[in-house]
Length: 516
Ligand SMILES: *Cc1c(COP(=O)(O)O)cnc(C)c1O
Picture 1 (cartoon, rainbow, N blue to C red):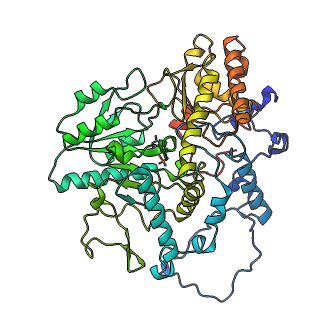
Picture 2: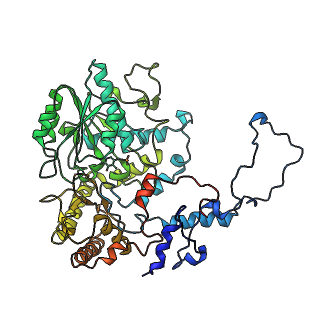
Picture 3: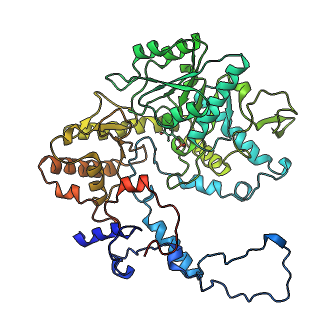
């Protein structure tokens, strides 16, 4: 355990006020303090030993730089150590259990990585002539085939770069289909438990959001849905299983009632990992759904890594899929990149080029190596693990809803009532015990929500250890042993930060002298 003085770390941020300790005194247990590159390097030195060229005329004319560029000079070891130290401050799925609910932090099989590094996939360029990348195009086509097969849908748009981007793509396709019919529907229904990207997408597409209530069981309230449904409704954006970790069992009814009103069903497919191989969203009446390859199909994410959010489309929406379209003619793959050249109703492009090639390779490797039975087992084990966590903790923590869950266990903060400990304190105390916190305060409809998604890739031993930790923290809180919560985290390089200040006045740019 570290001592109280470690709390001065929090004041290192610009504006913290207090006198700073020399950096070397803050190195602890082989963990190196890491200043910014601008603070490490110096404007006066240079990282390279090249002489100023003599007698060379630069051809830049007016574009010539007038002042110094202001980049610090760094040697190779200085630059290298900076990035290696930063990488060691990252928490990663390769280090331990990563229980963030809704994020699906599952193991990324190394086989996928090996495939993605094959030069024929890794070293190609999107502007290469299509005849030189037929293998890559075939891979995109094959992955698209399996995505439509697994979801029971007619078409797929491969280019969206992430889930939220896929939502935009799907809703633009819905809007294009409605406009094509001359419809002026202007409302999108969004359950109140939805991820924030759903209402944001609807607004971005020019729609008005009408919120639907959640019932006692954590599902869409069917009677509220019926109250809100009218001829103005263009679509519902529904997540299934939803963000409370519950299967929306009325989805087929909801879909047929929306369809009867001339609207569409957008499904947020971020939780597809809980039902893959078991249920086909197309059979439930879904018209468009994004698939987060980086969640369900294990392509790496977190820390800003690349995502990929292909969108599967029903027969009604297939004609409105964005460009490029991938077709096969006489054994050769071809990308249709323009609407004027070919007779298509696409709403345009959603992204430059054709999608995240590296993610496609990993996702297809994952699908093929699991096979149909393996994918169904992924869903079963994800649900089993979440229910194991839920059941093992329900006597000391408070499940937000009764009964079993799908792939994530949702608790609220009733078990902390009267202890003086909040969800935030609880999460910070987990850090001192070596665990990354779960998703907190989401979904918004649950007070002090704690959303835990263990995924299918954790062993029973790892789940037991995690459960023991949460159990002992919950007991400590109830017994009034709250010091370990209010001070937490003490073992992390930084203690509590001023989160309000960080959110309201983020310092995103280094300016000389600000940190000193
Ligand atoms: C992750 C997630 C999204 C957004 O996906 P990104 O790939 O992060 O853009 C949307 N909805 C839900 C329920 C999610 O969990």
